[in-house]
Length: 600
Ligand SMILES: Cc1ncc(C[n+]2csc(CCOP(=O)(O)OP(=O)(O)O)c2C)c(N)n1
Ligand SMILES: CC(=O)[C@@H](O)[C@H](O)COP(=O)(O)O
Ligand SMILES: [Mg+2]
Image 1 (cartoon, rainbow, N blue to C red):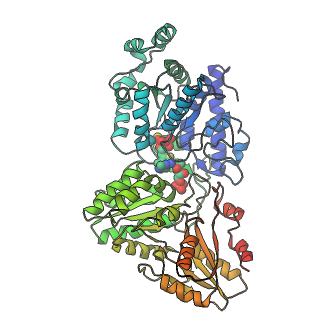
Image 2: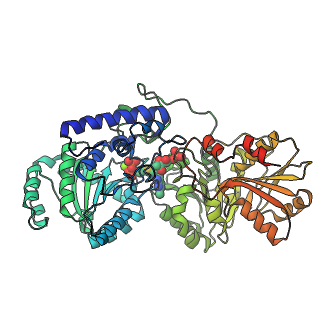
Image 3: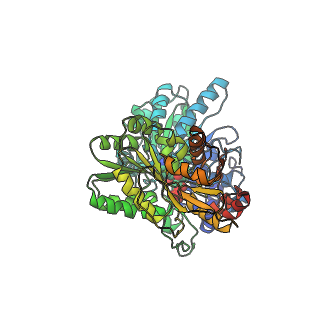
């Protein structure tokens, strides 16, 4: 869709069409909802002012990129949003040249823009990176690392700060309070009545045309704003739903040829009444009825997250030294429940996984028992902190790793597949996983008592219901669920246990099933005994094959010089795409009905 030659009226109509399309498709397919709705005018204005054919358009997290996709060739394909084999919910260069980078984790955009700006300068090209970043994403450290360089080196980069005063939940921290103060201030309300003539002195020489335009439209560049102190021009706040105002401001920002932040106030969910404002539930949605705003009935099975939160709550009532954090995912991790019950012991620290890990390490040093609850994919951000601040100190923190395994429609940026591989190599780390609700409770009890860092992983959604008696966790002890008359042994880890059991039930032979429970330390004694009876082992775990559960077993067998044939049904050496979890697993040949044919 070419927007350059469209007039304001036409652009406003395009905004309306985009909104309708988002509401229509997301209400049927689910997806991110209130963020893209709030970014429609900003995105259309970006396309009017900048040149998508040459300028890098960089969306932070990129969950707000649906208007961009609709403008750039995916109007029809939008029906397939986040579906298996359909278009991604995030920007993806192999889907379109208009998508500069893959994104899904927050706060990478300004670094990307600086890298692009350096490349543009070295190549001597006339292009300018433009960023859209939300207020919630302004809390992460990466942003300040990037601004630190940008303010000093002054690459021409335009940063649109899309401020809806919301992260997924209410935003946390002083930066967020500061931004809200600017938005709420007199300055914003009186925007149309004030002119700051300082701006004219700030403009590059000969920019008289620009100065005139600025005076006309009464845009302001304000001194005293934190970004200005850092060496980055600041324009705003502007109304992020007023197309005319945004276009004029972006034009100015583009001409300045310096780093500039355009602070736009937006309403999350704009254009769909039920979602407008600060409503967490409309951030990411399952299908819903457009007329009533009611969501389709969800499965009644209790999600592992909820089992975790309830169990941790009970544990926290018993033990006053339990504390915990979430990094901007209070409802996603269930920590909101604990924050409510124990507001002085559980914290949302905003998008700040690195800080979450290190600050809790210090609490452990002080004798507290931190439960650091982070999705597997976002824990990747805190890796150095896990090594440097937790494992070297051998501090007894618990990493409660939610969304382990395939997460479904978010796809490759969010799959929780690497945690075992990246944690297993760390000295002092204990790794265990429950197979169902009851064992999750026991795993938490174990984690509480553990004297070293302990990672407990559990999946998105609900565990399968299993009819095997749950026993308490003991360090490095596996549980043999059933003996078998064949020479085969199935070894399950976490949610892999139910997959092993289902596969066994479909197989003609009577096969032994082991719930490994600990991938570190392994139950070496039991594994040795089992090697005498069973000579073909099969590994079931929702994790990367390289460095995963099968690797741990093979390392052990090799160390003991035990000769066993091992097949691992973990994930191969490739990134796993998006779609309904079952369809994705089917595409990987990992459904029990498929696995049974691989057991020969
Ligand atoms: C490193 C990282 N941690 C957590 C998340 C989860 N997450 C996705 S969007 C989001 C909120 C972002 O807020 P903001 O940037 O203001 O965008 P909005 O949704 O308000 O448009 C969070 C916490 C993430 N994507 N990346
Ligand atoms: C964009 C992002 O990172 C989050 O919105 C994420 O999609 C949430 O995932 P869950 O739906 O599993 O909580
Ligand atoms: Mg926001």
